[in-house]
Image (cartoon, rainbow, N blue to C red; front, side):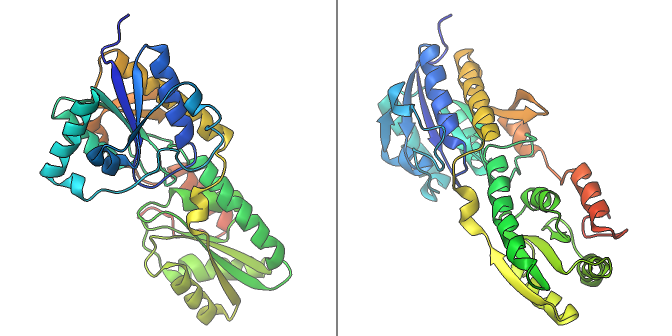
Length: 334
């Protein structure tokens, strides 16, 4: 079968996520398999505007799956938001002979692809973000590694917490979404988890679980806070200290969660998604987002995908409530 496209440009955009390199590798290797040329666009839409590219082949993507970050780098481009910027990007596509683009990133990446699709370029989006906040996909590249990285750091904190009667407040990433915070809290057995999606009654949802844990014999307490929670971890810690007189310490994990060698799950999912993106283009399909539903790799129209919404996992909420030992928690549905 002759592929419907002859040259693909692949890029990563927005925040980097472990596993993006595995997705790039899959796009390149699948392109070669289907008889399609592949060009790497460095620094996302910024690179597309300015012609920052590199030819990719079988050998150039060898041994990159195990590396964190993205070999194509990433950047945010304010210029691309403007119509003049998009015209400049289209001119680059025309100059390089690109008739298709694969963008790896989040909703902002997909919105950019949609604007280019309206100008005749075939486009496919792949969800890559540690926040796992892409509505059309139950899983995004980088999420598992970020969870494991945060969990490793928290396990180390526990070692020193056990030597003191102390409350540790740990801030994890998640500016608008608490998926990472909830998963980490369940995995580490946190006393409390706070997320931006849910308002809290501080006494009932934070102080009471800590008191109940202390009455149950626990002498150290772990509070997980998503970065998007109003006031952030330091404000939460101050309130806990004032209410309980506990020695309260704050740890902000920050961008360490983005780094490190990707987990086996992130490498595998990224590879499946990268292959599917090229397969769709080879078949003549366009304006799609590759996604994961359960263990299945599926695809959605970009417009449909962007219109979807994603709440916190109901099972995760129920388990978190049960694990606190308190009947009503910060994650209870309104």
